[in-house]
Picture 1 (cartoon, one colour):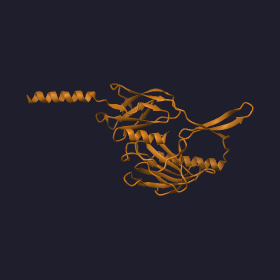
Picture 2 (cartoon, rainbow, N blue to C red):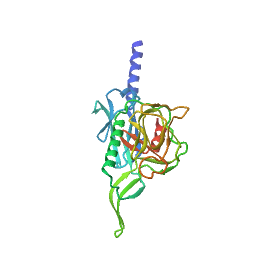
Picture 3 (cartoon, rainbow, N blue to C red):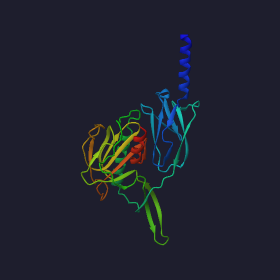
Picture 4 (tube, rainbow, N blue to C red):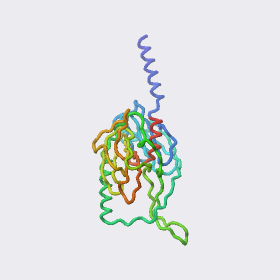
Amino acid sequence: MKILIIAVLLLISQISAAQVKPFEVLNPQVSQGDTLIIRINPQWQGPGAGMLIDGRGYAPNKFGYVYVGIRVDVEPAKYQVFLTEYGQIKTDILPAEFEVSEKYFNEWFRGKSPVLAKATQERLTKDQTLKNRAYSSINLLEDYTIGKYREPLDNMEVKDEFGTKRIYGAYDKKKKNIKIERIVPHGGVDLRATIGTKVYAINSGKVILAKRMLADGNILMIDHGSGIVSMYLHLAKFTVREGSIVKNGQNDQLIAYSGNTGGRNVPPHLDFRIKVHGTYVDPLKFIEISNQLK
């Protein structure tokens, strides 16, 4: 009798396990510039588990969550998500699907591209190298976050939206059109902030960069784990340093004061950005989606 009961319980557990999906796309309807969130269920988590999307592999964090940044220029379409093991697609697991819809982004004609002096170009290249080096140090498997994300300012007023197409070129008066040289999507949101406004970390993490740069001014980058990095540009002053651990909790973590550093004639504001696995995403939408689904 005991053997029969054990066999029945074992069969029930096997049936229940088979009914649990190996992974789930938590927000299968996304737009350009959004963040896709996938959860690998515990039975299928392991050191070799991962996801494959559009030919690119993504590693989950220690809780089985995978965050994917959707580029602003990605083709609107349906995409498949495959579960992988040590880089190989698990053919016995059916893929899931998500759909990317097109999103309208504002346009801003900035005139001709500035001609940069050699010294300026060299400084910009050096700054980019420092940012790349900091980004390469992030911990993809960790999740440093605690609880919900918060906004970086107490009062949020958007001056320039994420993804705004900053168009550089020459205006032809006869043809009444613009001969486009290049288009640069805005990688963050510009938030209204007077000099000295308190800037807070959006969640717990590790400060991986806190430096003065030519175009960005005082820039601070925080690694939140899971391939998520928040950035704060044009700051007046840092209150944390590289290597500092910032904590999310009852007392909001002050990390800096806003300013107008960097570039030419930069008005006081905070340029707030988030990168997910190397892709700039809408930071305000990221906070909204993450707080809903986490």
